[in-house]
Each structure stands twice: as C-alpha cells, then as structure tokens.
Image (cartoon, rainbow, N blue to C red; front, side, top):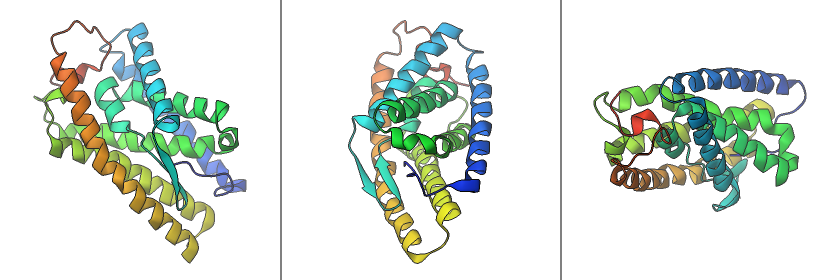
Length: 225
C-alpha cells in the first residue's frame, strides 16, 4: 500500500500533512479511550506489540509491486481485534516509521500519505465494528462472516485511499487508472486471506480465555461491550 515518492508532490502534499495531523489527533483520542480499561504500561506494551506486528507485516511477510503501489499483508483487523484501536493506531504509525527509517528511507517523504492510508481505514473499522459486532459478543466469539466484513472495511479502505492518492496526484489518465485497477485487484486477495488469520488468532485467544493475561489484550477481546 506504499505510495511511491512523486505520485503526490509539491503543493498537493499540504493536504497529506493535514490528513496525517488529523489522523494523529484522532489516534490520541482512541488511545485515551483505551486507557479507560488499562493502565499506561499495559497500553505501551500493546502498542509495542502492534509496532512489531506492523514491522513484520511490512518486512517479513511476502510483498510485491502491483500497479500504482505495493501489496503488503497489513493485517490491520488482526491488530484491532487483539490490541484495540488505540494501540493498533500507534503500532501502525511506529511500524511504518521504523520500516521507512531503517529499510526504505526513500519512502519517508511520503510518510504522511502512507500514514493516512493506514489509519483512516482503521478509524472506519473502529466505527463500523459497533454495528458488525453485537454488544453481547466478545471478539473471540466472532464468526467468519463478521470477521470478513471487518476485513473488507479495513482493506477496502486501504484500496480506496491508494486510489484517491493516485488520482489526486496523477489525475485520470488511462495509464494511471489501469495501475489503480491492477493494484485493487491484487490487494483484494488480502481481504480473503486476512479473515483466516483473524479466526486462527481468535481461536488461539479463546483457548487462553481463562489465563491471567492482565491488560495484554484489548478489553473487548474477551468481554462484551
């Protein structure tokens, strides 16, 4: 989902900086909400786990170029279900920053663009999860259909943001549109794969339901709303 340098540039980057600042502000709000159920050290541990997860998604899991961007298996829904929206947001940003700083410094000029692409779908997932998941159901009890809907929200949001940045930066030329379609078709595979990963980790978490995990995971993982 990386937008390469040059796709958006010049004065158009002002919007990217503004959207990233807005995303950072809302992430702080999500973190504050998470802290209602956990203390600061527990939240920091969860954010660190999300950071490591994001870094693994970028650098360890398979990734390949497709059209206007790259296909990465960014399992944002998995992070959200296990660690909560606030910790997931922090981890996505820090993981992206680590990846850019140490492995792809040429991506750093587009940090605001890529940060927006990762976070706004997470915000949409956080909002729509309240409709997808009944209040009486813990996340470990989700079924495939519910997890698929959540994955579609997050990964579909990434596809939409990549398409937006490409059109915003490069216009509606036929070559650009073809590159967007190629990326969208390739990235749609993640929507099919992520629910299987989610169900696997949720099944593992369900098996550990009675363990004393403290605040290592988000409150909703084992509890109703």
